[in-house]
Length: 166
Image 1 (cartoon, rainbow, N blue to C red):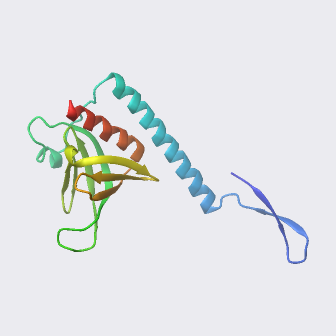
Image 2 (cartoon, helix red, strand yellow):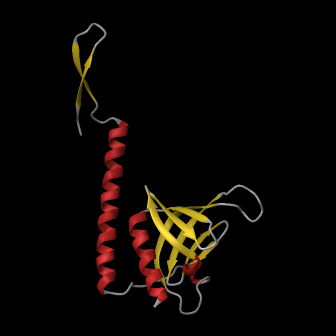
């Protein structure tokens, strides 16, 4: 991408300044491409879930040990960051947890140095803000989640929650 901006030099003569390859422009283009690809994947998944049930995937050894009988794994995000918002039980400030996020037929499971489980019944609402998913839990607390392909992840979670209700 190349743009030319007209500027006036200190001597009053007009000159062009090229911004081709500027890091901010490159980063913006990369972000827009990533968002467009994520939106397209979410649209395809949403359309697929309207006509077919979610397909389970084979669990790795870490999550296989945690799954309940009959619980299926439907999606994985290898690099997820989750932060609880609101008062913490021990009174400390909220801190982030990182690890692999597993979307199952019954719950979200974050496996990292400190595992965290959120049952679908605990989730009141899921929204998207920028590149983060925001969860409002039934107890009034909030959780934000950063993970690859958040738009597709939102669709996967919605489909898993809907299937769990039936």
